[in-house]
Image (cartoon, helix red, strand yellow):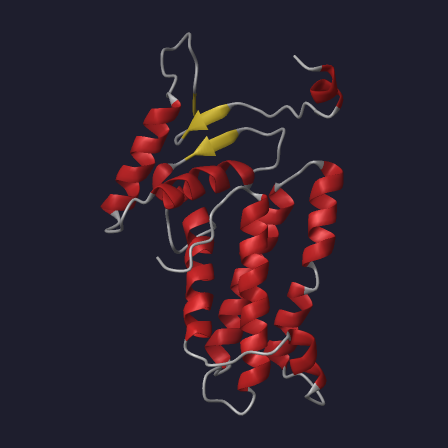
Length: 208
């Protein structure tokens, strides 16, 4: 064990890992689930949902399910919930990123967010909400780093995706008079999702 590695390492304990239903993983009880079995049941859950069980999606589901839980508490792993595209899951955020990239692919050009905002006298409510949420990213990462609590990033990314969904539901992007601004917002959102997922060790695919 290298002394310099020990000096740069911080031990962060967490609670028990439990199967869905509250059953503990215990060698005494004989219900320890090997890592490869967790991968297999997660892949099966994705296929049962009618989707392709790519490695990046399987790993994203498992990693996010663990990292969204505050360190120190028990972790309850439910394969079906971990792969859902309609809840607080890794694949949900991966799909959110791919969706944003798809929107951007429909436009020929894009401008920076600062340039787009300065070109308008004011932001509309949905635009303002998204800009506000995007502005919280750096502070969230700083907090997660200082506290050694990655769940802050997980929670933020899920909240960001929800804010974007409300924005996109009520604000046309392609073909609108405010297209340049809104494309910049979509690009900023996609980049933020990608970077946040990267910090969690999760891939951000452009297509799903």
